[in-house]
Image (cartoon, rainbow, N blue to C red; front, side, top):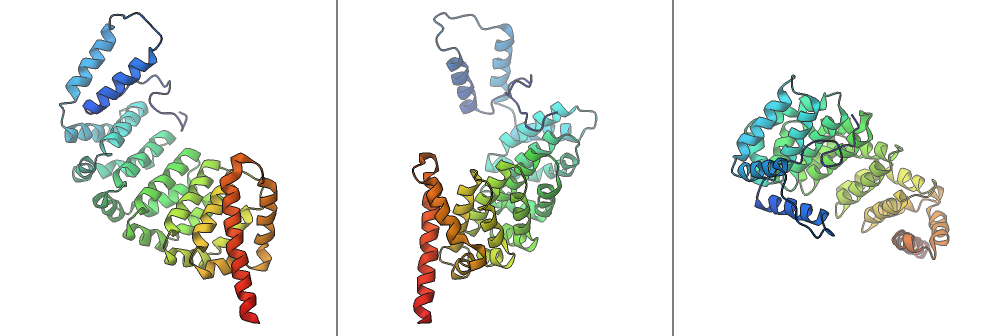
Length: 323
């Protein structure tokens, strides 16, 4: 089964039941828009009527009971993978609601994580990571529960060793959600050498993973000098600058954004970037020349210009101090 497949993309699975009136209205609007341009009204098919009636009835169900059913499906070895994937998708939707996410933990839902991570089906693995990302998104209770369960190092290992690109990318996404505005998660990320995992993710040939790794690095380092010090300690500055010498890609824009975030208000990292052996000033000057007049690269050009300005200001300051 393709790791990038999902519901509603031609996989043949039935549309999932809306969970509330808002979801039902959205479904009806999408259905109506798909028929634009047709002047005649046709009777609703028996199959569609049955589906709609079931959707309305299902809106009265208990979220906890529905989540329990999904958990049991995932635990059952006799259930086929497609049904387990659908159960994971449903859990992701329920867990977008903070209260239901907390309920998921309280009813023992975390038991599905090791089962799903050990699946041979890549989509089951990455759908499981989607559940975790949904759980911890701006949810302090679930962030603490995931940390207590020891899932952060597990997800780092998945990011590093899984052979499926989508699984790797979803692992990074879940880690990003977990560490966002959660000091304990960030501390655990650092203590588990998380920056080295990001460095290795940037060395892969998975474009989406590289870009998201740079974005996560920027997010973590924003206004956080401890993280910036760790970046310097691990030699990450050298790697980031080195990637700028590679063949140009969209990754470069995110690299420059990350470098800017790191060096702002952090003299140590700015000094690291200014080391003569890195030749960053020349690289940026060349980039200015290459990108000039290309509208699609204006943001990258802006980053390069700003970084170059900071480096030149630092060099001038050092020269003044040496006089």
